[in-house]
Image (cartoon, rainbow, N blue to C red; front, side, top):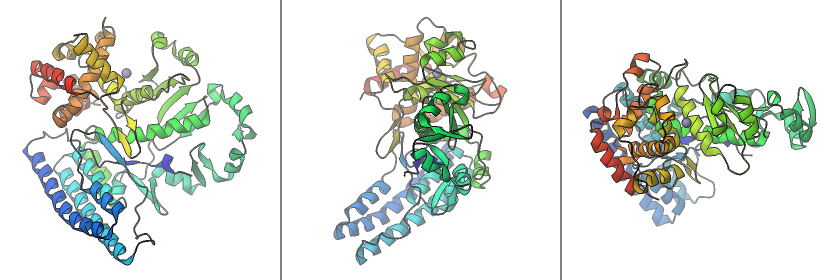
Length: 492
Ligand SMILES: [Zn+2]
């Protein structure tokens, strides 16, 4: 049985180094980044000597592991490796004596380096760069997944030999087990479930009968994971699958936008371990059996619902979408979840980008649709993704372009009711990719700062959100030109 569904923070941020928005990225930050480079370079020298020994002894997997540890993220890449539930603290029995010596040396080296990176992260935080500090905590865990303090900063708690979320620890203590088909279930219920039965209204019945009852959305299945609660009348298995996909997405999202989600103050609390034991209220997702049901349930509140494939409602703080046999609709799910995660970073209701800059609200959600999982980890920003293809088509073939200054002048209504709304969505997707990736991500911090201000819980910050020419220090006309240049090269 895989345990992957309950990981609180399933991926390690080895490859992302988001830069802060709360402090101007000036000389101080560059100085810190250089210090990190030096720390890493010293580590690599030591790793190389262990690697040589691995080669002499023919220990290929260990040498490959070292290659992975040596590698630093390219700033242009947005991907992340999985973090194991636990490190192996003793060498495997099968190794020869010589190999065990090398193994131990590598473990010691990794542990020492993780400790150094963790201390460095604290200094980074003290200097006010919370996003960078967050990424450094995850960098520490890449080298030692068992680093106790770094784990706790990220909200893990230890349960027996594993690191799990606060929710998982509670469930396990209360006799629940995680199952990739059924989600969290009482251990004593598992034999019933395995025999094709289900508990509905305190009564065991056949799964087929239960599915009939659950077809009524009021009696739908509910799947709870670390950050989500999925309600669905499709099937329990599908609910569990979606919840797991969302949990993984949640992690990458938080790595990319680390600067957005943690002010230095919040991050200090995380370092003090204040957040690690509490279970936050879940994000809600409703997943309907059919498009008809989706339309039916929402049309009173939103007359144009039939033209959509998914919807995040700020008033009920819920993502709504539906099962589609013909198309696996995960892109829609990531899109709407992006809206949800940005919006729910603050508790109270508020208008977002009502007067200006609305394009990025949709642009960033379209961009995040490109989220993918592969064997080793997850990534975003694959140039072959359909939205980016459309962006290239729109600008380079159709020769359609709304200059960034004009686009930025549009508020929510103007953007959504524009006669060329489809083309503007394509442009917004391409521009979001541009600000995330251009020049090895040189504008990414500016973009994160822009989003932070547009979504801020503070009305005075929202209304005075700085524009992207201001935040990047580059004139709009030059950004337009760079965008065209970027799109020509942003190809699969
Ligand atoms: Zn949207």
